[in-house]
Length: 253
Length: 216
Image (tube, rainbow over all chains, first blue to last red; front, side, top):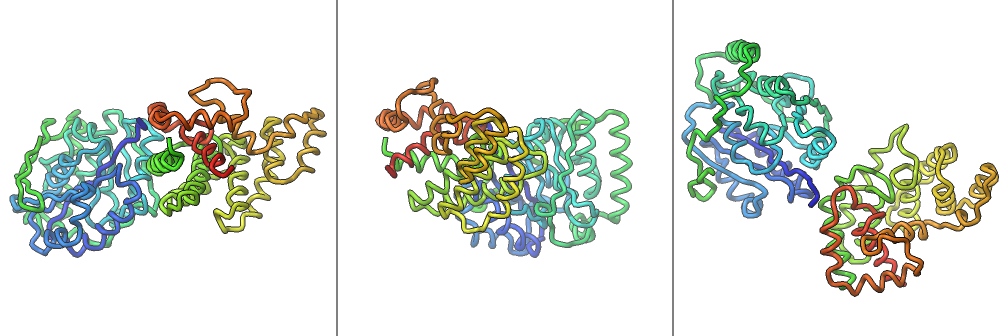
């Protein structure tokens, strides 16, 4: 009736309770006015720091309403950011998917802010809410229509566990004719301070952060130059079995 | 259908989708929707509508910019009138005199239609400006001068789906006809999209008339 696209914030988390406890409730509260258009999808990759219990004790109302969707798997032994993000995006059901790192704030009515931008622009638009500082945690805030995300194969799972996956996604979309829109409004792209080393720790990789970045940059560059614009051979799928907060297995359709 | 039911259901729709109307203006845009929600909040004693109205008003004021449209439908003149209305009827307590003085200056220089110009000065209570403007244009038009904001809205609101024509009947008679239709709201919803939610269009326009009818 009103042709307003809906939006999913896609969050991934593995042992970062100390960050998500600062952001999740605020983000849910900040978007409640338009919860009829917005969902938050949170994938917990086997956190052992009390995340699941906290969700159960504090957000049962939001989960029952479908405003927050919580999924759990303990099958990802070592953190891989592309696989993690693809999982969250696949479990989203709304028109637009937004990668929201667990240390990021949406801002007041941040979901509505993004929907308005998509309404003003072409459907084949990719929006990045990057604040300009590579260490401010906002580089990964990328929004695109879900069908577009799936068509390009999502984030490249063949990369090393961390680094460059965001830029690579944007570049592949741009090469396919997507309009890139940088929306740097500090009201909507704040993040909790943290360092890359925290994430690297969970990957159990022998590579340091900058080594992963170098390898992934080289691979991304080769792919783009040779016209390989669809990641994962175009086959996005769930790598792990997921269950909900109550332990019920999720059947992915 | 019951007036309160129409008002609450239409207000709920406008809370959910009003902010996505592109125009910030009074008759076609979000300013008018904000006015409607403020009125519904007061009439129905529902704080939620005031919350969404505040949000819409913030958005409208954030959208003000140099070079924007000046007319009553989508532009600054209508927004100025809307602010005046909110202040006079004590929906907002912010002092807007300075802002409205700036709007006056911009409207004075703008090439508005006779009707828009007349309506703006009458609504602002500046009859001297109205007649000065008419003299300067050398187009004395007493009919345009008689158009008040209320009448402007009513004339626009006659352009409803039910009639498709300007009616010669007083608008109050039209409302009595509309109220008796139980499918009124459903029919309007079927015709609604994010381009026609403003005061100038059926869903919100009819609600505005129902609020006036309720207060008669």
